[in-house]
Structure formats: structure tokens, C-alpha cells
Image 1 (cartoon, helix red, strand yellow):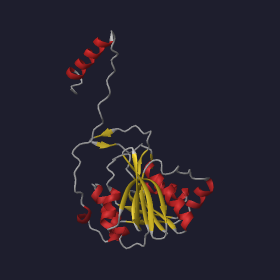
Image 2 (cartoon, rainbow, N blue to C red):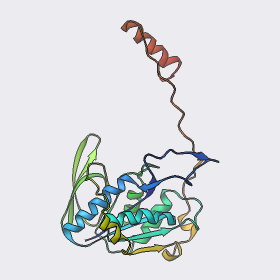
Image 3 (cartoon, one colour):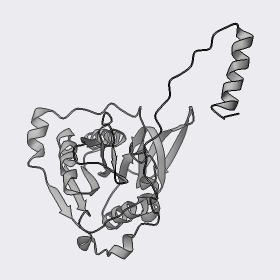
Length: 257
């Protein structure tokens, strides 16, 4: 079974974000594997161990993404692919990344593609469905369980407080939701083995793509931090007075009613 995992390098969940000249400051920031992608890596390894085959982790980004790919290899993935674009593209969007991934995968023999349900930085959840559409294969999002046979997959997906059971034929792309599994930590032997596992580096030229082929379809107008929260108010007095005062504050200060 040939399994590909789409991986993204994201800010550490504990990182304090700062904006300089309208751009997110990355110089001193810590980066990690997008947490939802860790569920995808773990599930891919489990399916590989059960059905045999190979797990390839794939990311589009800068040379710094090699660290996250090596972490995925230490977790148990077999090989990694880094498509470097930092010297070729000044701007990207979901269309750009999905187009690059699709062009890389279009001639690959694959049974299953796993990705995180969303990335914690952008949260659009577009890459997986866009890649599936580009490859012409089924896409199932927000999965919390998957059972694979030689020809099909039985999948449980999260749907607004309930679950949906889906059966579909391979190959498919599925995006992974919290609750699917508990991602493993890289072990010391895994870290040592990861240094010798293959990591292929490509660029747009290797894929036969020009800048115009992947030019963004959207433009970011402004990046800004949310406003700081103001101190809360404690209402005193009897309940009728508190209810009246709450309504007044919601109308006059919060302006939500």
C-alpha cells in the first residue's frame, strides 16, 4: 500500500505571534508539524504496518521544512519529499500549494493520501479537497476512524456533534480529525534511523511548472492581531437589576443587540 501524507510546517501552538511591517515575524519563532498532520502521519504508519507498503511525507515550503520532515521520518515514515519554492515564489495561496502537490502526485502510484483536517495557522481546510479534485479521486474530510481493505475503505467522519459512516473505493484522500489516534513521539532509535532515510528535494523546474502556472488566485490585503480583551465587569445587585443592566451593556457598549 502506497500512502502519501501531506505535511505543513506551522508555528508552535505556544508561540506568541508578532507582526512587523504587515507580515508575521518568523525569525525567532519556533515551528512544528501542524498538529492535525500528526494524526495523518500516525494513521499512515499504522496502516502501513498492517497492510505493508510505504509511507511518504510531502511538504511544499522552504528549506527549513526539512526539520519537520525529519521528525515525521523519526516517527516512522519511510521517505520524505520537500518541494522548495522560497526562491521562486514571493506569494502563495491554497491554490498554489494544491496545484504544486497535485502536479507532483499526478503520475505517482498511490492508494491513499492523508492530510490534516486543517492547519492551525490558516485554518482554511482547502488543500486536501483541492488536491483530491485535481487528481480526480474521492475526498472524505474530518475522519475519526478508517478501515482499509485491498479495494475500498470504511470511514467514520465527524459531522457537527454526530458521526457519518462512508464506504468508498481506493484511491482516496482523507483529512484527519482529532480523535483518530494518539500520535507517537519519535524514539531515539527512530531519530537515528531518520538521518539515513531518503529525503528528496525538488523545485518547480523539476515538476515542469512555471510561475504563471501556480500564481495565487487570492491576495492578502492585511494581516493584523485581534484586539486585546478588555477587563470584564461584575454586575451586582438583585437579579432583576443585573438582567436589566446586562441588556443595557450589551446594547450600548458591546453593541451586539
